[in-house]
Image (cartoon, rainbow, N blue to C red; front, side):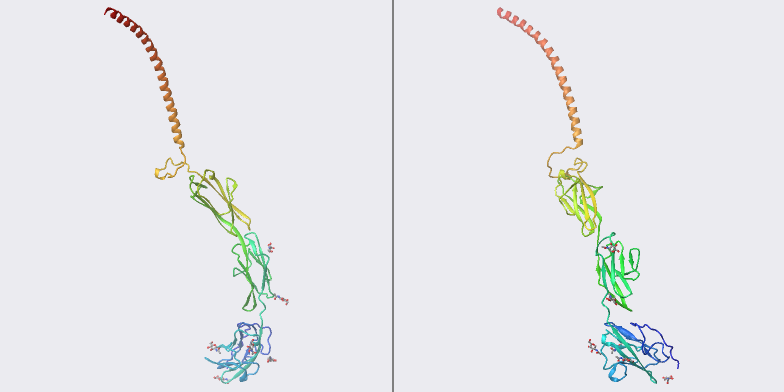
Length: 399
Ligand SMILES: *[C@@H]1O[C@H](CO)[C@@H](O)[C@H](O)[C@H]1NC(C)=O
Ligand SMILES: *[C@@H]1O[C@H](CO)[C@@H](O)[C@H](O)[C@H]1NC(C)=O
Ligand SMILES: *[C@@H]1O[C@H](CO)[C@@H](O)[C@H](O)[C@H]1NC(C)=O
Ligand SMILES: *[C@@H]1O[C@H](CO)[C@@H](O)[C@H](O)[C@H]1NC(C)=O
Ligand SMILES: *[C@@H]1O[C@H](CO)[C@@H](O)[C@H](O)[C@H]1NC(C)=O
Ligand SMILES: *[C@@H]1O[C@H](CO)[C@@H](O)[C@H](O)[C@H]1NC(C)=O
């Protein structure tokens, strides 16, 4: 008979061999044995068979050291027949290679287990000891700070465990040492240098038994950041740092920024602080004294970072003279004259004055010269009149 060579695998499934008892390993060829097991409460335990012969027809597992009918847990007849016995708790099964699998192990599953293997012209038995242990409580975690400022603060986290296999998770993703994160040689300390806003949670996970992982609680970090992307928006739009608006029109300005915690806002107008702590400022009806420089100051109170944005409100450069009548504001209070119109009026006034003076001078000259002529003429006329009068008198005396 061609017997299979012994397979000396120690680790199958959830296997942790501390020491080997009676069955041992690498026994004489042909003799089956059970790998000694340490199971963990609540997890699956496997009593693995080694060195199994060919042509097995049936595997039967028993509780204790005796293969008596009263101790039977489960019998598996190849290929497809499973027969539970009095010791079957509902959690056991036998695999096609004869291993006994116990789901959700309990502490009182600890004890001896015996297997009986039948190949038709030969039977073998083996007994093994299963120990179910309690898990230690989950690892503890502590951090030296949870409220941090982005790119400034570092955080150190410590994993409280006696287990040597420790893995650190940042945002639930396993991490290894990098230029931003340092893990101590014993694995128990993690330092995140100059935290970022994306460093949200820290957790350590230990592998207390092969493939059994225990997680610490999740530590949430609060990383203050910003103000970021500070923008000043306005209606009417800002062009080259200037809002162009007419007296009486509505102007809205709003500072937008991203930060944690939310930023505080302040406004100044021509250098003096305004009594406003909102991101938004509305000038319902722009007045003359509201023209000028505005500054929006955005501050993250925790990160102690401040940014500002400036804008100027001014009147349109060419006021209304060149607008078609339908674009002129309907309600107009006051009287407006444009610069060019003023120049035109001044020129017209000067020209008019010069003209009037000329006319006046001419009139005066004309007047005096005319009067002189008239005077000399009237003196002559007077004399003539007297002469004529004398003539008439002479005539009357005649008639
Ligand atoms: C054992 O597992 C097989 C499937 O692998 C299943 O058909 C069978 O019913 C199980 N037996 C018991 C006792 O749970
Ligand atoms: C093991 O303990 C459970 C309760 O914890 C009990 O129901 C079960 O009968 C016990 N099994 C044995 C074999 O003592
Ligand atoms: C288990 O079996 C070993 C020997 O096979 C024996 O010494 C031991 O007392 C047994 N333990 C129990 C609890 O039956
Ligand atoms: C067992 O039976 C097989 C055939 O089923 C045979 O080849 C083998 O030699 C037998 N072994 C022994 C030890 O009798
Ligand atoms: C926390 O530990 C880190 C790394 O050792 C250190 O840089 C940081 O200052 C500590 N923070 C506090 C609040 O002690
Ligand atoms: C580590 O082991 C020691 C002694 O064995 C024990 O006192 C301590 O509580 C253990 N620590 C943890 C976190 O399990």
